[in-house]
Length: 264
Image 1: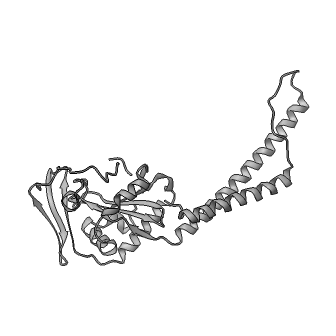
Image 2: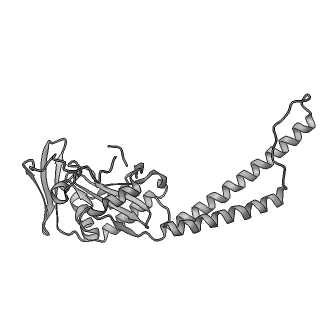
């Protein structure tokens, strides 16, 4: 399995693009006023030996261009930092419902998923699966899909993943949250498009903080443990968590449809 933070909404992104272009044009005018304009470069035609004066002039021009490019990069970096800060100020989480997976994949099916490295200070990286699953249930309801998705919804989920929560954050960022080893693991694998690598840790921290404030709700999942070559029914009945080994379900491995497959 290849492991799988965050643009604004489409309308807001258009505004940001316009502002970026306006800022770039204004800054270009300021720089040109400081260092002067120049003609577009033309191909050099060798008609005589190199002239030291010409060489010195070209060196000055090259140095001026380097300064201008450096100023542009600094301005872009400052703008990007400001935009990221605005994005991280308020995160809105929307879970993808089981019957909305097709729409999600039409929009994000070509995503190159990348997971954020774990941290020892995050509940989402340290709490056992039972505790995380109950808090996810309380905060977002049932998973987008789980191991018995075929029995429940008529499509083939992965038997070796206990649960998958798919999210769209701030109307535009795809985020996946999966168990690490069914009821025997700890922490969540949280991933998004690799484009958002810089802010994915903050996105995961926000999810972790949200789960920390929740009290677990009852839930029930199935899980096929690959290493153990066994099926388990696992859940929380409102009093205590449980994990019970069961026979291989009759619906196991019988993929009725290949719809809504997310490739990892």
